[in-house]
Length: 117
Image (cartoon, rainbow, N blue to C red; front, side, top):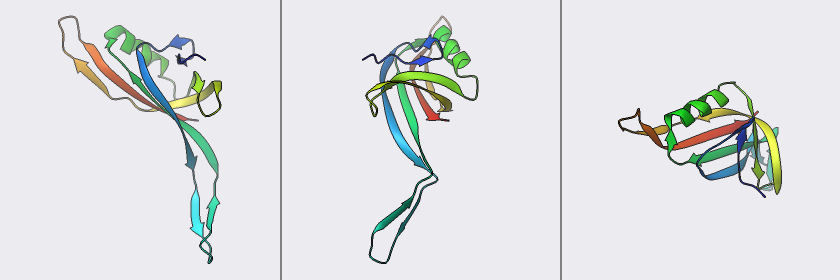
């Protein structure tokens, strides 16, 4: 089992942790007269939340390039399946904390939130 994550051919640097959560989309929940839960589920999609450690400006630029397309392939170990998977995701959140320094700065941490296509 490898915990490396790739955006296409680009291996993410400084990976601290990640989570793979399955979310239901377009789900309608109702209850019948007996109180039983009725669910109309359209689809289930993965949401990946990645935490990266300190990055250089060059590494940040490489991540920006790899995530530029609306959808891009991501290869990761899927703990829900117990195997390595590749799926297409889009980047829904990318906050980054900058640490000022003389050489253009370094990024102290980066959290990426990806949603499956």
